[in-house]
Length: 208
Image (cartoon, rainbow, N blue to C red; front, side):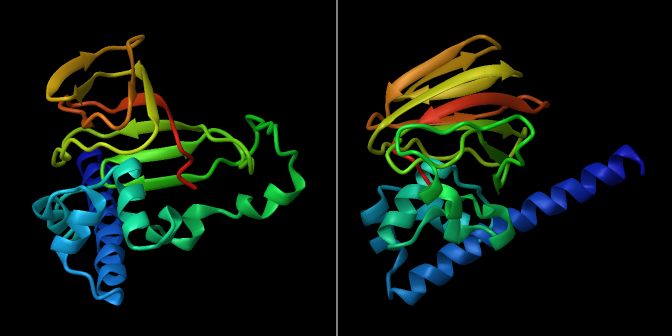
């Protein structure tokens, strides 16, 4: 398959996944009889951005989606295809509450939202609070609004470049650079280059 054809197919797949998350957001919101203004008030995200996500124009990161999910009394996993979520939650009861061990050979759960693909780096643990993720951020797409939420956030760039905004100030991160912040400070990340950026991200609280 030619590179241009493959790229075109990948772009269509990204738009379809992006639109699926937005469509579920609209459906869940309407099921609760909530307006976009009401969802904006409860989630802390702007009406314009939420509207773009619902129409498949913009993607939404997992931490921002977590706020939307809480506002709609849903789990983050509800916004993705059933097969994306895997079934590792069923094994939680068999795991010790203080420890998990994830082998490289274990099939990892992945979630895709627009330009970002999130790979879960650890099994579920009922009393563990960190959410370690490997995040691939494709170039392009619309930039998210800066957003604050409960918890802490850490990002370490493995490859590519990342534009990370913290409290209104932009910082360009290169491989080996990292940022660690209280997530209550408004922040956002964006890949404005022409190649995929890969980041190890650790957030609290757990999203799934």
